[in-house]
Length: 117
Image (cartoon, rainbow, N blue to C red):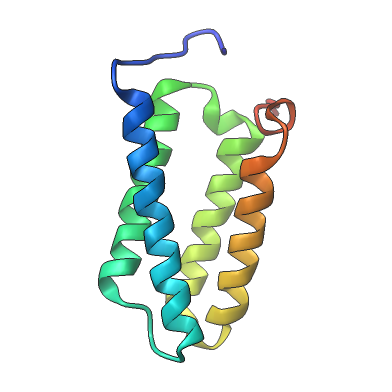
């Protein structure tokens, strides 16, 4: 753990439920794209709210998180999500790019994700 790491009882379960909600949002948005429909507002909202809450919890728990590759990758992902929100023509390609990028980064070794810049 990093020096200054903060925790509270139930944090792990909160993260588990936030991840489940986030994945439900991802699946809902992806299903809408595959069906040729626009993303449902409720699925997009679930994806964004759960993602922001997980990011805020990570930043609170580990104050140096935003100076690590993990935090910086999330800033890049938020930029890609803004592009996704405003550019309907590129949404399918952006969806898959963000999904692959996120999967690779979330499953990369901790020694890489938590490397500080």
